[in-house]
Length: 331
Image (cartoon, rainbow, N blue to C red; front, top):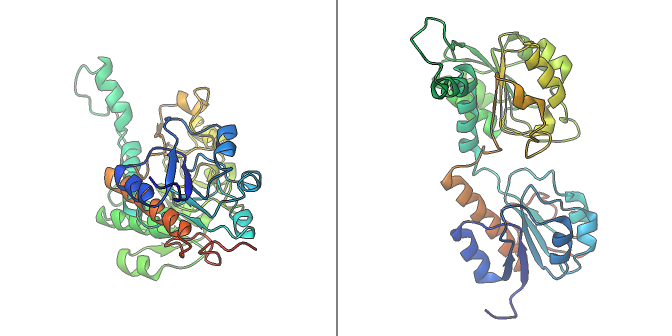
């Protein structure tokens, strides 16, 4: 490989299709461990890097940027970017890329899988069947609420929220939603009804969150919000963990203030083994696998590679986070 190729650091092994793109345009060093590179290693590796391809587990902040004088592009294999100080990157003329759109339907599938699993107590039933406790058919054994014809409240009618509404429409659910903007498409196509958050919480049998993590949405769901929900309601979160006050959710589940929850994301990831949520039977816990289909994760990696290579070549990023900074421009 030519030594004239730009130096790149990739913080985790990616699917072959993405690595072929990266290796064709750069001299890439790839972190080979399953765990993310420690902070000290990341700071060391970016010193000579012209490009950085990172994951949500990597903190990209002013300290790192000041330690990377040659950095021309940051490409993240994720839609979210709350681990990246985008303003600090933009101030240095460094474009940041993400991978929007590609994981929408896959995450919506996972959301509905969690909803069904929590409602029909699938994980509890699996444990019951494996434990030897199953002795006979019983009329009320492991019963849960119906999903069809129930009311679903969607907090955030963006791309993923819209696709969740599409799936709910197939189950003939009544759909309420709240968002900063009305969705004419969801209203016309699925009969969704716009409501304020309080109304949505009090009337929904299922509540699912699909908002980005911002200062305004941090702990959007807390003790007051869970108190507004029906005691029979089920809460789903596949967005970002800190959108929910996890301690308040635990109390609501423990006290049966709400019936159950299905969670793919948490305030601290991975979920510590000491977390009290692990002691509850009325919550389904997943290790942040919302986009984890083979096709989707591969496509995400390819998009991230394409962003990276465009940045290295001085071209506009196909998917920039800050539209004002689509290519490297040192201030």
